[in-house]
Length: 162
Ligand code: 4NP
Image (cartoon, rainbow, N blue to C red; front, side):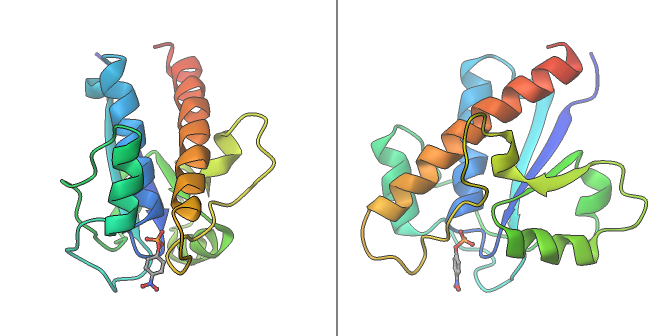
């Protein structure tokens, strides 16, 4: 069998948006029996929350749609990630800028915005829900992440013939 496709989802704190992407994408490939074809991880450009589980509001929103994120723990992006991952997908432009600064010149993978894979979606960035009060911001993250996950999966399936 071919090498697994290695995907890293990145946001600022790794406690809201990127763990959501991590959990949703992992859930989808498990449902489809494709889990062993992928290695999925997530990380933050900042280290404020290293070692923490996803934000309780993120976990609650995910749980309402049947996803469990409780096994995930925050970590910071490290330089080795650029040799480990085929796709490094940022949630917003600030995350992407920070990643570009650290990215080695010879990086052969795909470094870009996650929402570029969301077909028919005009929003380019997953808005940071951390400082929003209600559930709506966390639900919006899930809507965007679910759409981009489907598009990313289709893209990889086409590219890899799986
Ligand atoms: P995330 O959200 O980048 O989606 O995990 C945030 C989490 C924490 C902070 C900012 C954004 N913070 O400033 O602590």
